[in-house]
Amino acid sequence: MRSFVRSSLCLAALSGAAIIVAASPADAVHRAGPPWISIEYPANPLDPSTRGAYLLVHAFHHQLPVSSPVRGTAEGLVGGARKSITLRFDSTTRPGVYALRKQWGDEGVWSLVISVVPHEDNIAQALVELGPDGVTSVRVPTRREREWTIPRPITAQEIEQSLQSRASRTAARR
Image (cartoon, rainbow, N blue to C red):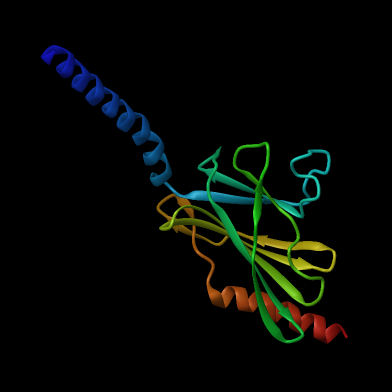
C-alpha cells in the first residue's frame, strides 16, 4: 500500500512539474517582448467570419499571430459634445484576428482606440481616425528601445488632438 501511495505521489509530482514546464514557455513568450497590433481595412467580405465587419484587428507577439485580449473605445465629438463608446470585438476563424463591427453613429468626428493587451503592463495600441468614407489614418505610437521599435500607449492628449483637428477642418469646410 505504501509503495502505491509513494508511486501515486511521484506520479502526481511529475504531472505537476510537466504542467509547470508546459505552461512556462508560453507564459514566458507573452512576457518576453512586446505585442504588436495591425489594422486591416476593409475586412474581407468573402470570409464568413469577417463578413459585415468594419475592420479587422490582428494581434501579434513578434511576428506570430496570438489570441490575446483586444479591447477598445470609439471616441467622438458629436454636436460639440464628447462621446465614448466601449467596443465589442468578435473572434474570427483565424488565430489572433478579431472583427470589429460598427458601433458608433454617423454624426460627428470619430477615432477608435484599439488595444492588444496580453498583460496590463504590456500593451500595443492603434489610433484609427475615421472619416465619412471610412478609415483615413491608422497610427501605432512607438518608441525606440535599443534596436527595437516598441509600441507605447496612446495619450489622452493624442486622442483629443485627433478629434479636435478633424472637427476644426470639418467646420472650416462648411
